[in-house]
Length: 422
Image (tube, rainbow, N blue to C red; front, side, top):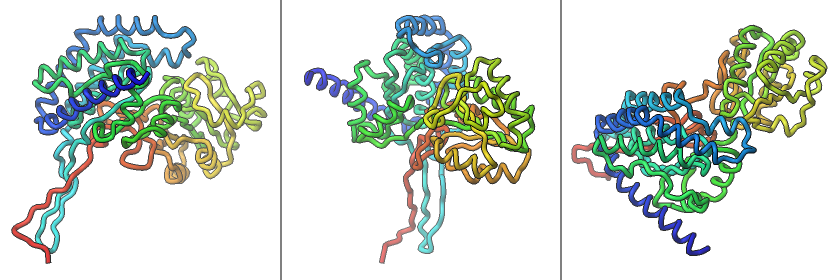
């Protein structure tokens, strides 16, 4: 057992040292080289789409038969999803280079000019589950922001991730950049995750993207700084002044467009004043789309055949076609429920009352708040970031979709004319 652990640690150290050397070279790389790597990788994704789909089919065939539909959806690649990955790489290439940006500049009374300048973080360790597309998204953002990355995806997506990684390496090679800028874990052994978490001094930042179990383990064990992505227990609040048709469109999309993503709405909060007329319509809409429910007593008084909700239901990120429902008494009550049960990810209000919307948005602690829009817009691509490495729900460094700017730190440059300190 110790021999296996020692070998896993050796593999991690070899990968991390190669990544560190690559990161030092990449940090000085001009924008055209980074952009060429991304566009060439996008072309490779399109050219190798049949190979990627075949690898994905092998992953799906090898996956356990009891996978939930939402998990299987996250694991599945289609021609449209491969094209979306390729477009994502091209969109990242088209974005401004975040490295070297002057974030602030000021002059001190003694004449010293002080600049705060953006620079890469260094080596990113990305730990994620089931979603093969994260391989391309994370690699693109790390590459463009000057960071090397070690990708450790779920064992169920090993073949898919390997096929996508081959396209990324092809892009790096075409641009004359080190192939070790983007590496995938050389083993699917779970011990490799532990080695990554212990790699202080070799990995500069860990980004976990997955379920509660993964994120909890990372937060408990990591000796490397972590950019946390907690549960996506998102709420849509239908205020008394909501436009009913708008509320129906938004909720159907927020819940059912893709139920397995972290931006999917898991709880509907609806004002008592509008619930008698609107809740039956919302339930009928979602039932027609295959949704099930867990509802509080006030909601069940309006729609009696709704299954009853427990407190645990309101604390559950379903990641499936299940919606918790609660009737509330205005903005303050909705906010109180969100503070008690939410994960500080994404919340939305549907209302024509601007004052109520401002009170809701200002009262949130969550990373993202929306007014009259679906929670599924919490996404790096939809924010104009090209892609995202995850949704940060912590309080430090970054919050919400993590794109290029959030993968940079900064340093100071101080320019003098011979000043000495008294």
